[in-house]
Image (cartoon, rainbow, N blue to C red; front, side, top):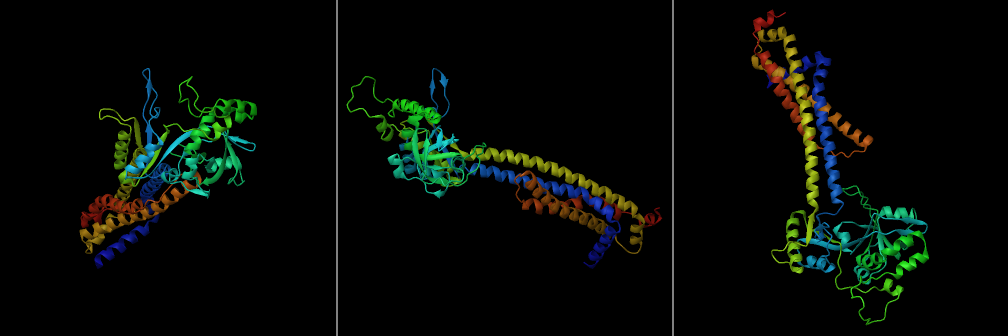
Length: 461
């Protein structure tokens, strides 16, 4: 132990004698370790950002869409058929225990007017209060609408923050009346900020209302939205007169059993038809591990409700958001692997540089080595001395590289606004790699020094 301590002291003294050369020897390791740290932290930040983007859709979300429809050999794509209903949503909530919640949704595209502002939100969504649970989206100001609002087709809505800012700027929107198409709706809440989706869509530019209101009040009046937006009251009234919220469920020319509704009655009290189709159903599994079970249960419930024979294909589709997360994760992992390969090359170059400098050092100090061996130093002492020098250089380079890598990561985040996240495995791994490089690339020069003949070494000029 005493011999090892003395050997270590000798090695450190040798390094201090030529500080410039020692510093230049460390450069390769410093650059390699800094590259590993910076690249791993940037990669982790991108992965965290991708997970957050997918998570903003809601944890463990499943999207249930209508199936494909076709006509004349032309396929209209997934979601084009009319096969999902609000009752389907109730059934899967009741009979699929692997689900945490589910909500039917319908969409509409309308101009939204308040005062002199006329804006088209990215999304106008009709759903139930369970939608906020599925999406894990809280109401920051005010409150969400209720099941009673859904049953009564109440003209109430909740705004995303972007829509609230576009319409009201700094004014408090709660309790205010806005016009969605030709329908006046009262704002009862403002949602918490959600941010951009995975596809870059602003999720906060949205209006969410009871799905019955959107389906039977707003969407049925879509033909009048253009005239409403233009401010022509005569055109709006004419368009409203053509609204038929029943979607013509009775044959043309059938005898009228009941008095015909006025335009105001049609808008305020539209009659429900038996088949309440919805665009899709959003559901959330109880946990990520239960997603496969939830998909299986949803499929069984809907096939039974739609009375599909075993040989018939599904008239719906269930999409798992974890597929998207998995695809993003694979691409991020590929990028991280490429970055690590580049960093590993840098480390290898740094290791070769250390071996080269140590070989030069052995050549320069041949007489010193011969003198030490002549006064009693053994071959293993010489081997230990040069190994310690190599390891100390690599560890010092690794420490400086860690600080430089962390600094680079913070600088990238501050100047380029790229996401970064601390990678502790990369930091601890860098220390281990630095020591390993010192041993591997320092062994040959140390071994060569320990094999010198003392007499030949003393004669070396």
